[in-house]
Image (cartoon, rainbow, N blue to C red; front, side, top):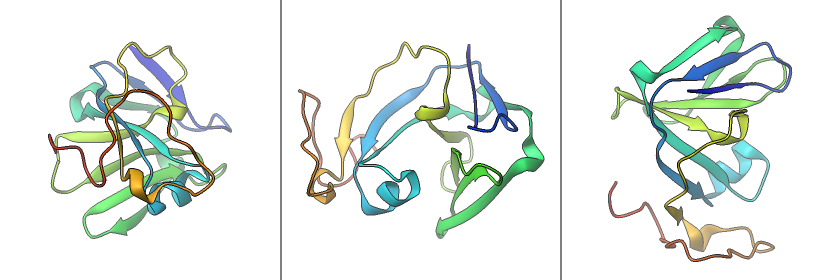
Length: 134
């Protein structure tokens, strides 16, 4: 089981299932949403993700049709996103998970959109758009 929460502590959640398909996304939307060089996200089955406190403290932003990003309306910490095309999954922003994560990233996506000041290091596959399994 994994636990996590936002910066101010008003939103708390738990994950009771595997974190799947962890990726580093370098697209401009993820960079802006995270305020960093990339976002690190993983899929979790909806029945394995539960907000345990502060659900009313979340607000959402539909960043593209059918895709809503949820974050704490007090401190701004990004928590999850939901995509209407994948109703049985939530995409968790791994920076807000407080428990050590046993699963590992599988790829860098939108690598050609990376920030010009960033160097992508390591041996993970790099894709110009989504990873082939998506």
